[in-house]
Image 1 (cartoon, rainbow, N blue to C red):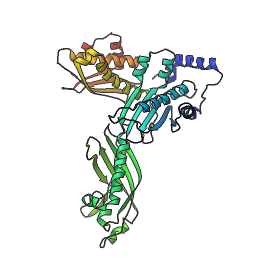
Image 2: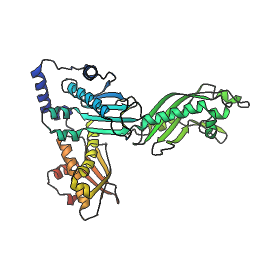
Image 3: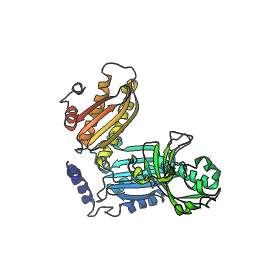
Image 4: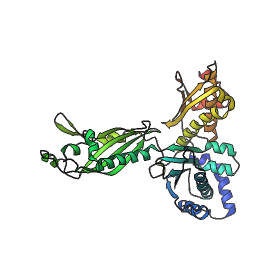
Length: 413
């Protein structure tokens, strides 16, 4: 794999030449990036609630906004202006610093509508290139990731806290949940149980599902006949739960609650819930705190960008839009293999339609990977899940040959 900075050597030389021609020191030197962005937002745009955090080579910027979305669930105009002002502040700083940053993620989150957030994710060198007129503004906008979404992690945590709070305020609600909230509602005297959440960890499993690992301290007064249980579960003992939230279930999003302790065959048993929780992959990249959960990398960024471009190909081209319907598009990179799953259906099935779909997508993908000079992959898998699933797996070398028209799409079918 070609080293990152070696690939962008020419661009870096131009950038540093521009910086050095203006002054001996960069305007925003290493170590001053976070503070500088907050100061620009406050001094020039009167935004004093902006937070910043650098994770590796990724800059995270967070701003809470009251009324991010309108009643019709669209981005509020005033909120959009605030986001634009913060984005301009980010661009000013990252194009005038010697801090080695690769990505930025700007998160605007609604303080009223729980879980509603708008995310802008960009590659720092794309910002530099558009300012140097090395890429067009149209191409630049294609490269930015925009996500106006519902954060299932935030909204799910709120649902869990509401449930536990309701149990404490009205213990009768637990009457049908005794087997789940074991053992406190079995061995405790009625109306004496109190459960206090001490910690919650979450993982996004999909755009509407989240898994939560909940730690709690549970207090109670023992019921007559259950005194022996206090040796194992003294008042104030620690307990754990796994909670699965699915917001596709609109009225009852709490899909499943798994307790640590359970009673089976006259024995008290326990599950290792932390091990179970750790086995699940977190598909989300923005944490509860509004910052990226980890340092972003170019492979992930390109998988997301290309998946969005797949949709735009068939939605922005008028001729293609009349002929094809796009239901979904998702991308990921794992173990050096890109995988793009999309659901694209011809409005009227004709011979050659499948070739049109794959040809447009594969050539676009090859062009994007070439323009970024990305070498960190071996194969690319394209899967159309619409109707009878169709799949093409192509090597990096063959994708480049297809981009150069050295091989034809027919040979791949």
